[in-house]
Amino acid sequence: MATQPERLPQAVVDAGRLWAGGVVTAIVAALVAVVGVLVARGLLDVPVLAPSGEGTLGDASTAEMAGLAFIAALLATALLHLLMVAVVQPLRFFGWIVALLTALAVLVPFLTDAGTDEQVATAAIALAIGVTIGSLLSGVARRSVRGPGLPPPR
Image 1 (tube, helix red, strand yellow):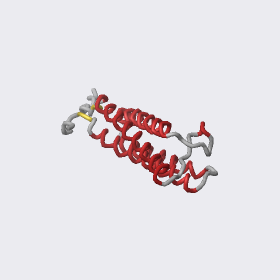
Image 2: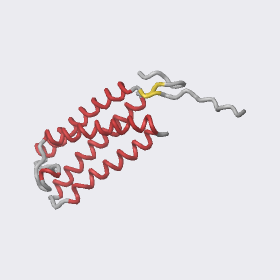
Image 3: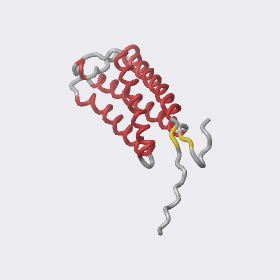
Image 4: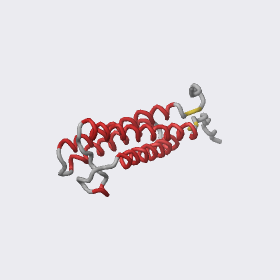
C-alpha cells in the first residue's frame, strides 16, 4: 500500500490585513490623482484627458480621476487576494499584471488627437497612480501572509 506524501502546512493570507492595506492604498492612489491633476492644471496650466465617457478631449474632473484611482486600487487588491490564494509566486504575477496595465494606461493618452502636453500630463498621472498601487500593495501582500516558518507581521 502506497503512503500519501506528507502535506506541509501552508501559509495563510490574512484577508483583513490585506484589505485594510488595500483600502489605504486606494486612498493614497486617489490622493496621488488629486495632486497630479492639481499640478497639471494649477502649476502647469495643462488640461488632463477625461475618461472615455467625457470624450477624447473632454476635461477630467479631479473627483473623477481620484475615483478611478480609488477603484483601480480596490480592483488590484481583489486581484492580489485571488493570486495569493490561487497561484505560486503571486507577487511575481501581480507585478507583471500591474506593470502591463500601467503601461496600457500610460500609452492610451497618446492614441488620442489631444495636444502633446495634455497627453504627457495624463500619462504622467497614470504612471504615478500605477506605481503607487503596485508598490504599496506588494508591500501589503508581504505583510499579510502568516504561516509556518514566516516571521509574524509587524
